[in-house]
Length: 255
Image (cartoon, rainbow, N blue to C red):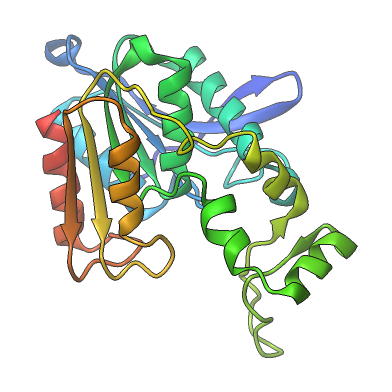
């Protein structure tokens, strides 16, 4: 069950979060820190599932909304990877202590890798769920049409999909020039990544948003040997079926 969101108030923004404190018998165990995807929020299926399991197990767990997402302040269209990383660091530093297992879903995997680089001494493990590091340069830019490129230059943003028929809700997320330009300065797959903790990557092979080969590429860039990839042959990008979630939980517990 979702808790009532709390707010971390900063001078220029409010970041919504929910948190569980470890039970007395589990205070020595690492906490779980969840980072959602592009346009997602902390009430999503995976985030809520982890909250439920942590409540039962008495484990510490923190989830939050980036600025412009969910219950946090700001506009989605104004944000970029660097902004959302800064939100993540603010929440991580203010609300958690000790070692944490970083769990990043889709874009949250990219954010989580940047967090691991920034706070290496706090990482008990990293779990990427359809992790999408460098997606602006490696996935979006190569697929952009000349029309989309021109539209982004003209108006500052474009949409990857055509507008829905009149009368239907438009749920498309804008891809902004600001996001694309900032993404260049946040790339993690151009050099080796040092993560001195177990790394586990969960990836569906029917993912139409993040090719499963991305998990292989990420594993190759991680400069240590305790890295495992779990491929789900019929898994999609969301990996939110009950069996997918159970597998995720087993992977988290193994760390």
